[in-house]
Image (cartoon, rainbow, N blue to C red; front, side, top):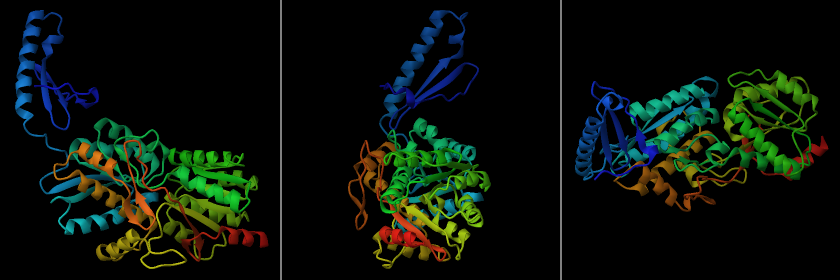
Length: 452
């Protein structure tokens, strides 16, 4: 018989005919169609006709529901041999490097899985669409994924303002959103059943950075340079919360508009504050421009950026000969396959380097690519646990069952109904001769600063 479904599962088809309009109530296993006479909304129609017609149609719907309940409804984006994921991310424009690297890392692992036959006999395909780091375009892409393309899940989205723009659709459609290249707190608090974070948050990154600045380097005058949007605001709040722990606040705040490199006004505010360090929440182009102009104006604080900036591209733009002290936090270990500078090669990092070389031989391993690679590993693990009879709800239940999933020495992930945060560790790198290299010697750097 027909089941009563949550209001959130009711989708109005919106199709109008001469006699009826349709409503469809659906969940993972039931499908009920109610045909409601348009003339029942006309007060001039005899009441008994409306009642009789509605009762007849409801009884017919119940019979149909009994027959259809024998088999499960098809799961969107899932066929006998294929699972389709949708990815909206920047592949061009001022953040194009970030999206390209994230996608390549994920594809390297998924190609490997597909060559082995996929997951439970199904290969995995990612439909990737460029949004140029533009929130409205990301929203439009997501609508098409859900309504037209019927993808199983959303995957590897890039950026805070873009991902947050799509979040209401995720909540409304009850579609999984897995592995976003953003540390936004709004994707973590409150916990959303359908949002699966792998990386650490910007709050965690800025807290770790401020702790080193204050405790290890003895700095007190810390400013914030940020992108004037949801991403920048999130990093700004995280920095303010971290400073508050030490009864401090930013000595200055400077911002710029997303998609531009117009940083002079923000730089001027910060330079006048004589800040000893600048926390930078931006994209690689704007941050590189800020550092270059600061050097030209003989303003030489310590520069720190969160991981989203992109180590390889920022290093390329700042250049080999820059005297600036530039630090960047990372949410994954170094993308290396041999030990270096006191860091052992992580198992997942070694696999990433090997598979990237196999499938994309012209690409250079990157922190961002490794993050995309780990996103794919978690996606595959969730699909594996969910089993052959795959639905979105079974997939989310599978994610919630992941406990101590090993990604390498000292690197594991655990989820639960109230836990959608995967990795917690923060790693630091420092710009050295045109490359960001692993860094941990804060006391030695403090001595270097004091000797200047």
